[in-house]
Structure formats: C-alpha cells, structure tokens
Image (cartoon, rainbow, N blue to C red):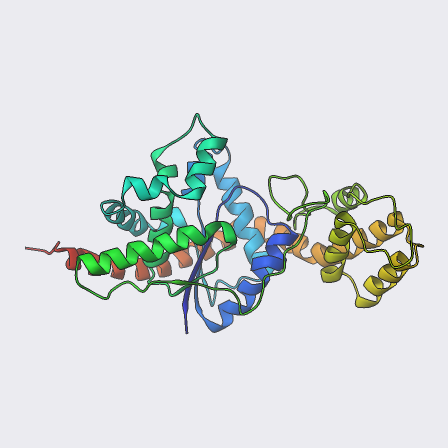
Length: 329
C-alpha cells in the first residue's frame, strides 16, 4: 500500500477537467492506498495575500470534494492550516534550501512576471512548503500535473538532502503517481487549451442547468464541414471530447456521422451536449448544496481529518527533531 498526498488550493470551484482528470482517479486510489487529501489554504496566500472570503472558499472546495465521492472514512481529508507541524518542517527544510535553486524554478519565474508587485518570500519558498506537505506524511507517491513536476523533483531533492546531511534513510523520495494510464485532458469551451479555472472556458460542478446551457451554446465551433469525411477543427474536436465523457456512445456516434456527412447542425449538438452535462453534474451539484448546508458534518470531517493528519505529522516531527539533535534534557 502506497502513502499518497495531494492538495488543492481554495481559489476556485472544481470543473469537469478537475473531475475527469484527477478527482475520478482519487476515488479509485483512496480504496487501495493510504491517502491524505488536503486543502492548501496557506499556499493560496502566495498569490492571493488578501483572499477575501477564504473560509467560504475552503468550505466550497471541501464540499465539492466530498460531493464527488472522496470518503473521509477511508481517506484523511483535512485543511492545511489545521496541521501546524507542517510549518515546523517547512522552517527546518528552509534552512537547507538554497536561494539559487529556488529562484531557478519555472513557476517562480512565471509568477514574478505575472505579479511583479507581489514577489514575496512565500512565493519563492513555495516548493519547500509543498515538500513539507508531502514528506511530513512520508509519502511515496504524489499525483502531479505537468506544471508541478519540477516541484516534485525538488521535494525528492530536499528529502535526499536531509537524509544525506544527517546520515539517515528517513524520508522516502516520492515518485509521481500517474494512475497507471494517461490522464484524460478535458478541453475548454473556447476552442483551445485545457479547461481551467481562470480562463473562463470551464463547466463547473456547481453550475446551474441554466449556466451550463448558456456556456455550452456560446462554445466556439466553426463554419461546418465542407466536404464529406472532413476532420473536425480543433474547436469542434474539443466538443466531441467533452461529449465522449458525458454522453451515451450512441449519441457521440450519431453526431460524428452527421459531421462526416456534412449534415451536422452545431446548435443541435450543443443542445444535446448541454443536457448530457446537466444529467452528469446535477446529482453532484445537489450533493454540494446539501453538504455545504451541513456545517456540523463539515466540522466533523475536518476535525477528524486534522486529528489523523496531526498524528502522522507529529510522529515525523518528533523523529526529525531527534535526528537533527533536539532532545529533552
């Protein structure tokens, strides 16, 4: 059994890309592994130092995770700020993280271009906090996207550096968890790229049926095929990709045949796609509403999660202090 750690920042709602890309795989892995799923509320401060309704954002993401099927009875679900041991390890790792290597990370370079007026220390040491989140539970696997691969490699480096510095084999060097197959990439509705939170091209799990219909009907298409057998444009291919995960195979087959014969009407395709998305998301949306309204249940979940996460983290901190040389008189 692997120990797996994964976090999400409370800066936006989950969308179809999140669900089919990662969350659906979390549902499988939680049954077979020792999983820690956390809401990275302190990480969010690196780019949103004045976050507004951070409690509401945390609550929304937590409710959405639970509504999707993350089971707090078998996985440890917690809020990052509820586990102070993480920040002690973050401090200790920072003592052996070097300015040059942190400044060279691609994410830091990108962020300072995007937010030149907010180049804070937390932004620079983001990879160190991420490493602390992971290795404090002595994780062996971490689900990461392409944009986080460099951070995971730095986590491995910090674990290796600690082991070498203190002549121990304490921290495992966690590997990327690739789910055993290529992750499904859900495209956005704007005709290019993947579905995202900030691109304005996504269908969110909490969207109302009316919102979904409006978004899908505005999706980018093209002028239609001009010759039989013509391949769909990138924008239309994107719609077929989304349809392939929410619609009946017969429906997908029908519209592909209509496109191949130049008889397709994109308005009809969009209407069908919108209704199929609603059919898929509406049960999740209803669970989100129900769970969000149950503050007692949410409090119980995060309290239990914090207790389990702190039990794991506290043992690591005790061991790390002893390894470094901090011992009671």
